Image 1 (cartoon, rainbow, N blue to C red):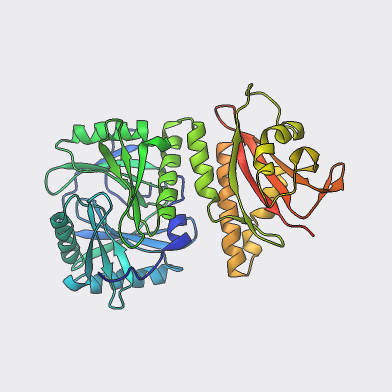
Image 2: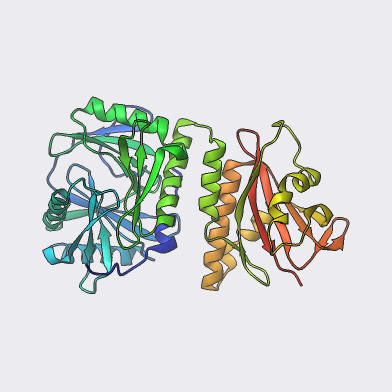
Length: 415
């Protein structure tokens, strides 16, 4: 087994973080967010789109619209087009395909260049022989393909008929990326009923199962209450990327269906967004999720309330100034925090730019999931309304849709 030769990292993750269906796919609307396609043409096509991170990606679709391969991220459209050419050239060679088994017994394949760099990854298949047939399909598709550049639009489910007579559905994000795809159904009615099931389930974290492939790759399923898999995400380069991909689908579906996030959904969204984010000071600390129940959903979020409800987090942290009850405090303005923390365009250093993007993603998750967001600083030195200290706790909290307190906490080293 050859080593998995590249990590997609932040770029591939951010390509999926667009909360909204790309134009360029045939289909007649049969509802507000469901379209139907009867295309069974043998010709395949590449779909090229720009991700939320400004990088470019492509997917290879069969004639019936089923996605059979997707790419890594490229810094320019021209580079992505060269990537398509690499897939066309290497995709004709059987030895370039590496068939792998996932943790749950399903199979997928990577398409590799001559230097073993992964240039495309397939969807999941129930058997190894199906994955081998999928690889053979890609080999035939790349002989004659077209390239479509996708446009932005609304998120949308698409139902289509496969060349085998089965019916499928998929979900597209605003940038045109296919972020969810189904197994086959015997009838269009069965596929449409499954779309309704996904609309009901996919907004909540408990409906997701994240599983491992090989070489650190991961994927997710959406699972019904009876354990039946109703939809599949794509294969990601890491568990972290798969979790963020799943969160992206949850956000899309909640927006489409106007579903209210539960506290568990809020925790999942903020925890995923916080991974990799750092508060940069004299020492760099990550952000951890914090929460506490409120007796009344209208309880004002004040310094006194935060001291009472967040003391267990601060006092248990060996690195923080403590006890919280005895620290000086000051408040910050959430809008000012966002303006300062999210100004990534001014960052010329590549490391700081990446940290800034991570911080912006976390701040966006907080704003999307919480209301009445407040920023508090607690430190061992300072005075009334002014904080200094060796290890200052920064606590950013707001109110969840269920009316409880939630947010994140980090440490700033000021000496």
